[in-house]
Image 1 (cartoon, rainbow, N blue to C red):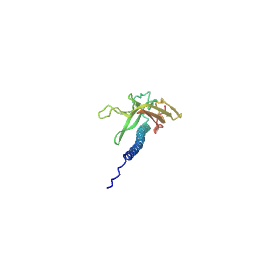
Image 2: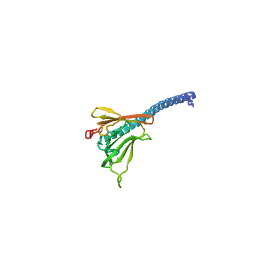
Image 3: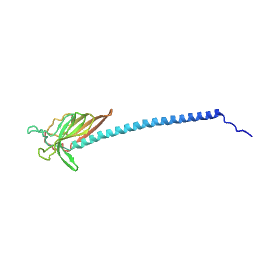
Image 4: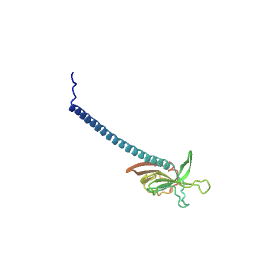
Length: 207
């Protein structure tokens, strides 16, 4: 009776070692792909967050453009008979009268101040033009955007065609306003430039 051949132990051990080496190589390739994928994913998240923040700054700029464009040639509340002020503007803040939305489908004349606050926000302060009675809303401040590191306004004198950072022609509206908003968020800096042409700048009393 013939006996069966016995498998060589060395051959079995050699085959198992090759399997281990192949498995390690596959794991190494998969690990490298995962590292590359995670790096790309983090980059995409960072780009998406930066894009969203830039969109937020740009949206604040577009809102300011529309608000400034509605400035009215009407005296501010601090005016006196001898010193009528239609528009007050400095490099980092300004004040004017304009039509503002106060609810869904409604609007009203408000004295509007745009200025930075102490907590790094740019705010819009609305003051009712007619007040004192019941049912008249009080002055309210609405933060436009946070993380503001700087804001700069410049005003165009339509008669001289020159820009300045300080509007001193009280009885006139500037023909246009240009500005830049700078914001810092999560270690990154964002800027947005705006330009507003005041539609009623020509309908005003002379200085």
